[in-house]
Image 1 (cartoon, rainbow, N blue to C red):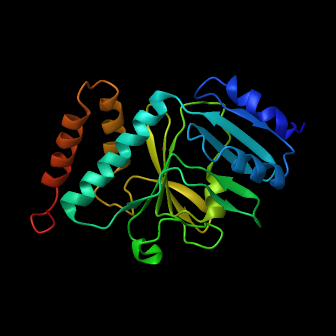
Image 2 (image 1 turned 90 degrees about the horizontal axis):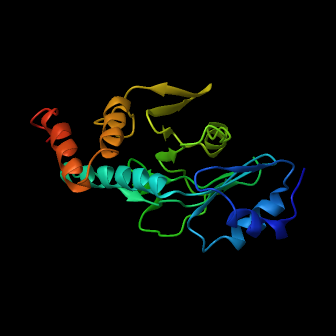
Length: 224
């Protein structure tokens, strides 16, 4: 049943970080109003799929994994000299599809030319990021892939706390793949190992350096 918009603040205050609250029969107008009300609250994520609204507050563990993935891609971009722009947790939504999502991270790599130097994007009209990242540590979460399909995000990385799966968008929807098409030096196994090792390390910088060097050493000399 729908929940009045005036109740959301109280609901959010009592959420356990990482555990979503899910509501049905929520109008698109109510979803957009809630986005406006939460614009300055970075620790809250909203997902909307044709009347189903998921609200989640983010745990420190959640942010830890997302930040490390962004650091890994950024460091690789510096070492391999490819263009990279991050729009973090930018809200992506399509009014006609009645779907909206705030990813845990999103990267433009091959599509950097399409957005140029702009800092503000409107995903109703602007191209989607090449990669969206989801740190989904809860078994109660709604499926995010139908939302990303409507947003036409080519590649989605989802980490469930033990395995990172790379999903590639095709004509029939998303299918899991072993290697990233957008960033071919990365595989699902390498990213899984990286995040699982991160859970045990006490030195994030050393971990990043070790993995980047391992990736670079595996490349042909002409690419390094």
